[in-house]
Length: 159
Image 1 (tube, rainbow, N blue to C red):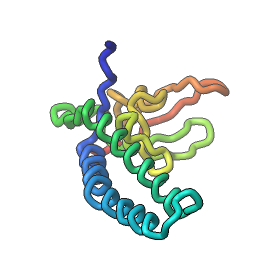
Image 2: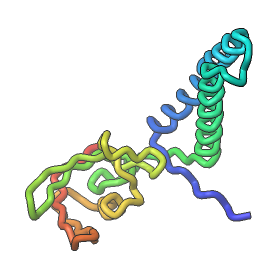
Image 3: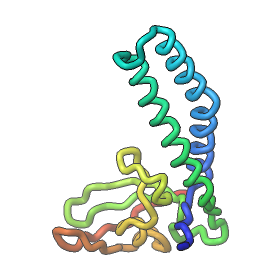
């Protein structure tokens, strides 16, 4: 059997998943079990939309619990590199500018499990993220994109 891919997480990401798992197991399970109980008490289950909805919700909760369990089972919390304060590494928040249109972007480098582009978190495995790792302020990185090569200048980063 092939070894499963390790999920690299920030400490914050790991804690967030642990908290979500705890909430699902302790509160959400109990809440949906009560909904199922109340729907059963209404009688005929074959035409009971509330029962069906509660069972669907229960299925979603159990699937999410299994997903989080799998992520946490293979999780590695990345240590911050306190030795190298000059170069960008995992967990840093980086600001860089598109050299062509001068638009500025700020993203936190996280593992693929935590990636949330809309909330400013990109994967260290993404084309941009992988180029940022080890780079320094003032450096220009180039990223191959479907419509050509894009150059970004790193303007700032913080741990």
